[in-house]
Structures are given as C-alpha cells and as structure tokens.
Image (cartoon, rainbow, N blue to C red; front, side):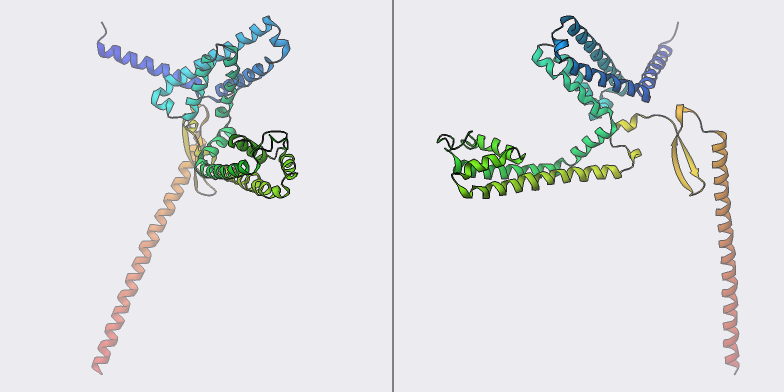
Length: 343
C-alpha cells in the first residue's frame, strides 16, 4: 500500500502537470490571437444580427443566438482557465483580466429580456485588453486622470457661472415666443444648451435668435465658446497627447501592464561583441542557447579577463617605477644636504 506521503507527492505532481498544461495553452501567442479573432467575429455577428433579414427570420435569428451562446461559453472557459492558473490573488492583481471576467459575467446576466440583451455588444470592449496599442492608450488616459480631474472641475465651474448668468438674462424668452426652443428656461436647460454650444453645434443659431432682442448678447456667447470650445477642450487633448507621447518613449520591453509578466520563456544573457553591451534575448520554444553563442560569449569573457589582468600588471609596474623614482629622489636630497653641511 502506498503511504500518505507518496499519495500527497503524486497528487502534487498531477496538479503541477495540470497547471503546466494550462500555462502552455494560455501563454502562446497563437492562442491569444485565436481568442482575439473570436471576439472580432462575435462582435461582427452581433452587428449583423441587427439587420432586418436576421431579425425578421426566426430560424436565422435562432442560429445567430446559438452561435453567440457558443462564443460566450468559450470566453467563460478561457476566463476560468486563467483564474485557475493565476489564482485569486494573481488574477485580480491585473485589472485587464478582471475587466474580461466582468464582461463575461455581465454577458451571462444579460441573457434575459431583449432590452438587457442589447448591452451584449459591450463584449466587443474586450478588444481593448487584447490589442497592445489600445491597451497602452487606455493606460495613458488613466495615468493623466489627476490632471483631467482638475480640468473637469474648471469646466464645471465655467458651466455653473455661465449657466446661472444665461438663465438670469434670457429666461422667459421662449414663453414670449422669441425663441424656438426653451434654451434657457431653467438651470438644467441652460446646462444642456451650454454643452451643445461647447460642441459647436448650432451655437450661432441660438445666439442670433437672442440677438434680435439683445444686440450685445454675442459678448457672453463668444467668451463662453473661447473658454470651453477652444481653451478647455484643447487642454484635455494636450494632456492626453502628452501622456501618449510619454508612453511612446518608454521601452516596449518595460511592460506597461501585468500582461508582460505572462511570458515565461527562458532568457539568455548575451554580450554584443561590437559595443560590449549586455543584451537580454528570449530563446524561442524554451530551448537552450546554441553552442556557437555560448562559445562566443565565453571567448569574450576570456578576452575581458585578460585585459583586466594586463591592467593589474601595468598598475603594479607603474607602482614599482614610482617607488624607485621616489627613493632616488630622497637619496639625491640627502646627498645635497650633506654636501651643503660640509661647506
């Protein structure tokens, strides 16, 4: 009979082999590309399902729903495998993995009424976590959120000041038939109108209607457009562009997210013979460095060791020469002093 320790060791080996199989499946780039392709296909199919030839055909709509269900099952299995491999702590340490899991959970929760199922298209947002450029852009936006918060507070203050002012000045013009819409009949109407003006949407039409009653009304309108449509919006764009430029200057190998830690391939430290730079290279397929690379590295290390030994020998020789010269100089000084004393 096997002892308890032997059974425990066997179970550990089985678990270790199980996790190794999951790692081999999750880490390779082809598997990530496969999941990315499924997300793209699923998103396209959800878009096609909105056309009348699908919505009006019950059989075709059922097939689309069945394929969508299969996609969701595959995404659920992938998230479960990641949760098993990384564990709770490692899994929830990465915000992108948590976002993927949240999308999958919400997709299962939105399988009820047609209104809720319409939000399944948010599953396409998983592309952000799979494409490195989009992921870096999202990280750039998150990194500049403190600056963005200050700009948004400034924008809210400007909106409040002009909202109160426009409501006080132009309230009642809609009831008098001077305006086609209740642009400034209440503070909330004023906020909505100011947002429309900030986006440059027909702001001149609103201004011209008010100018028929108040000819100088263009002054607060132009000031608001300059402050919001040009200054604040361009500040937001400048902050985002600055963050993106900083990310562009960072080395891609530094890794801006925890996904960089998923690459467990062994690495080889090589020495560039031209510049004496140490370069970290990945060995594909988990193999060992070639004998030629190892020989070149060993030769370079031997040459560097010889040069270091030569420098040590030269330093010793220079020290001996300095000692001899200093001793001779002291002897000359003693002779010259004794000669002076005799005189």
